[in-house]
Structure formats: C-alpha cells, structure tokens
Image 1 (cartoon, each protein chain N blue to C red):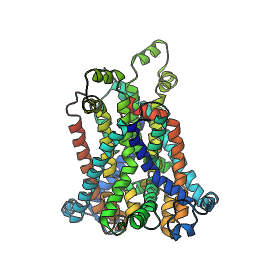
Image 2 (image 1 turned 90 degrees about the vertical axis):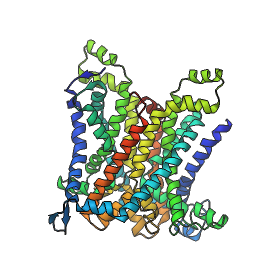
Image 3 (image 1 turned 135 degrees about the vertical axis):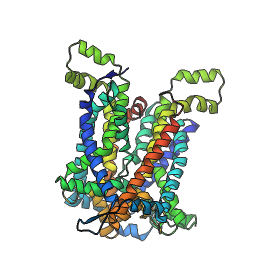
Image 4 (image 1 turned 135 degrees about the horizontal axis):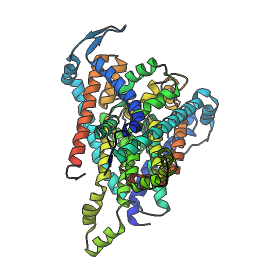
Length: 287
Length: 265
C-alpha cells in the first residue's frame, strides 16, 4: 500500500515544469493559431472554428488519414506476429543471446534520416542492391520513384526492418521471465507447442506486448522523417502520410491556421486510438 | 545450433544487408558508384571519410549531436529519478492523472510542435544552442524515463527504505548511496532509451538549430540536396552515425532484456 503524502509533489515538480514548458506553451500557440487567420506581418484575425470544419471536410485530409491508417495497420499486422515468432525461436542463454540482442537493436539506434537515406541507396535502380536484383537479375520492373505500389512496399519493408526488433526485445523479455517449472509442468501434461504458446507464453507476454503495440502505434502514426527522406511523399501523393502532409501545409505553404487545426485533430485522433487500444487490451486485467 | 535458430539468423541477415550496403558504398569512389553495380568496392578509398574528418562543418555536426544528446540524457534521468520515486512510493493528489498526462506527450507528433518550438526557443533566447535541443527532447524523454524507472522502483520492496531510516540515514543520503545503486540497471536502461530517442530525432533538432549547434543529421540532409549526388560521402557520414549507438548498445546489452522484464515497460 502506498503512503498518502502530498509532499511527493515536490519530487515531481522538476519533471512537471520541464515537460509543461515544452508541452503547454507550444500547445497553446497551436490552439491560438487554429482559431485565427493571418496574412503575415503578425496581423491576426479571429476565425472561429472554420479551420477545423475545413480540415474535417477536406478530401486531402481524408486521403492522408486513410493512408496513415493503412500504413499503421499494415506495419502492426507484419511486425507484431513476426516479432513474436523471432522472440520464440531465439536462444535463451549463452553468448548468442548477446549477439542477437546487440545486432537486432542496432537499426533502432540509427538516426531516422540515415535510415531513409540508407534505404534509398539500397533500393536505387542500377546502383542499389535491391534495385539491381529486381530489375537486372529477376527482371521485375521496380522503381519506387515512379510506381506507387513499389514505394509502398519499400516503406513498409523499411519500417519492418527498423522497428520489428522493438517487438522482439519486448516479447523476449516477457519470455525469459517465465519460470522453467511452467514448461516442465506443460511437458508432464503432454501439452502441444501450440498449447504452450497459447496458455503459457502468450499470457506472460501480454503486458509487454500491450506496450509494444502501443509504442508501435504511436510512433508509426507520427512517422515523418524516414518516408520523407525515402520517397518525399511521392510518387504523386501516394505515400504522403499525415505528418508529411502537415509539414507541407505548415512550413511549405505557411498556412498556419489550417496547419494548427490539423495538428489538434491529428493529436486528438492519436490520443483517442491509443486510449482505445489501451482500454481494450487491459480490459480483463484486474490491475 | 537448433533448427529453430534459423529464424533469428535470417532476420539478422535481413537487418545487416542494408547496413552492409551503406558501409560498402562509403568505401567506393563516386565514379564507381555512378558507373553501376558492384557487390564489393573495386577500388577501396578512404576519401569520403577524409572529407568528414577534415571539414569542420562535418565533424562539428557529430560533436554537436553528441553534446545535446548527452545533456538531454543527464537532465532526463536526474529529474526523472525523484519523480519516479514519488510515483512508486507515495499516493498524492492527482498522481494518476499526472502520470497519464506525462505519457500523452509521447503521443504528440513532433511535426505538430516544430513551429511553436522554434518560436518558443527564439523567444527565450536559446535558439541555436545545444541546450535548446536537449530541453526540447525532454518532452518525450522525461515521460519515458519516469515510466521505465517507476517500473524498476516498484520491484524494490519498501522495507529497503524503512530499514535505511531505522539505521539513521537521511533521505538524500539514502536515495543517493543506497537506493540509486540498487536500481542501477534501471538507470542504465532509462539512460539508454533517452540516448536512443534523442540521437535518432531529427525534425526538432533541425528546427531549433542553424549553425552553432547543427546536428550531424541536418548536415547530411543539406549535403544530399545541395551538393548534387555525393552518395559516397553521404554513406560515410551515415556509417559514422551508427557507431555511437553501437557502442552504447554494447555496454547495456545485458540490461536490455532484463530491464524490459523488470520494469513496467
């Protein structure tokens, strides 16, 4: 049982001040922009909720949001089962554990623009390994700067390359925390591999998998740098995800009002979906 | 070596291929890159690396990045330690709401904050300093550090605190000399994640800097667009950005799996 102690606020104060400085002031700026129109020179006019209405009705926003959900959905469907499968087949002890962990974590520590640039170099036709194999060896016409399907496959594979390891590490941590006795009991009962997975391993991985899915959802929903460097949102608008579109409006066209309104709607959607995920996944958990 | 180990092996192979390609490219001459496909560099060259280590705009990029990442990691962990202790040991007014609010900041898209951050840090006179980037990255690193450390502290029994008080320790002395050493694995994991997310972030780091504190990632994007297509140079710069991460991960390799399992993460 935790002690009731209001003085604990003093311990939290530095965190509160630093995060509030970074979160509240910029958020208020965004709210401020979202209800005003500007023609530059620091002249602002009250606009009410018009920007929100415009954004919510704009086909461009619907299209970007649709692409964003498609992207996030696809990477979750690929990365979560793949990550679990890899974690299940990893060695549990010995030198290879370290080797696996270090090499698998490596992609996550590469700056995001380098990830984009690396995959660009990797997939260039003529010069890149994938581009060369596809076009010149296998004879498949592959060019992600012209073909939307190829661009999509490339950003999905890139994201799986970049982040599947996060699911692996979390699932693996859940697995190693299972006591050996559980497996021995299962063996005595003659449980199949599937039964062991379904009734021992999966329940034990539930907490860490909730975290993995939440983190992957939030981060992939906010993804900007990697697809921007790799495809620039093209060909056409085919890989223009929400953040890319937002930056185009805010910094490219300098439409501050609509960009701010879009930011708030975007943030609200992220919060809402994260909350839904969280509630659904912890529903039958007493804690 | 069992049959099932083929899965992680293939996965690691898949992970290493693009990295190999980047490293191989960095040792090729521009002429060789543009002349077509070659699996290994035909004529090895260190020219690309020579450019980076002799041109201040390049090597200062690395120094700047490492500087603000280090400042951020130190700030995040130091302020997160007492906060995580409070969350794990005491209940106070609004504690759950505060904890959840902290976590929501990890959900905010960086793109949303780019412009307001620029205005805010210009207004307080910190634009183009290492401190600006370090403070801005606190937005998503402090909540993460609090989250991880709180999980670790939960697993330490309260009897430890009580015994220390009975032994006559003051709170600060107990916290620094007894409690922190007990959860040093957690501190390591938290520091690792702060380092990681600050090191890989580009959008805010680029927005908040111009010349004096420009991160290496921004130097790279500029080269990619302005100097035509210097792929070899870009590959060499990219290869060098992998090294700090690789070093850090080597040091914390034993803590990562354990850390995830122990902490609430």
